[in-house]
Image (cartoon, rainbow, N blue to C red; front, side, top):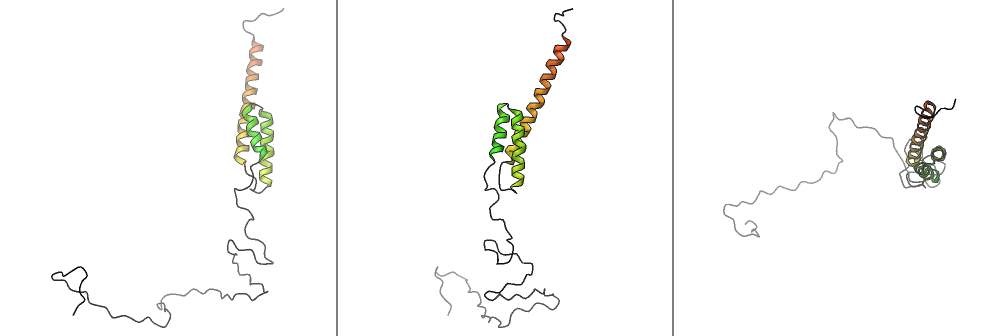
Length: 161
């Protein structure tokens, strides 16, 4: 007798044949003979107080380094340092028209950021202060040159001979 369907009787419905259960092999999987097994170096965990062998493996992130080994990762997260005050001052001075001060502060800020190995932030602010400051200096020099040329040519002005 077949098991009754919980959904009622269906005409011409046949139960699928049941497959016999296969026992799992007690032996581990054996690869095909043509496949090559890759040899890995054997690793035994170190005993208490013993240094593990150096095999080129880096420590896992989030774990402290083993004693006697140099740290493999930075002690801070990139992008979490303070923003350079010189970079902010460079941009503000350049925007206010004090371009020479902005350029000087921008160069100082870039030097400080470079020496901090990426901890201090604000490189973009310092570069923006430098660009704006140099553009203002160039425009100021051009403006003074135009005034000097105009004053020297003096096309319709009075001349004193």
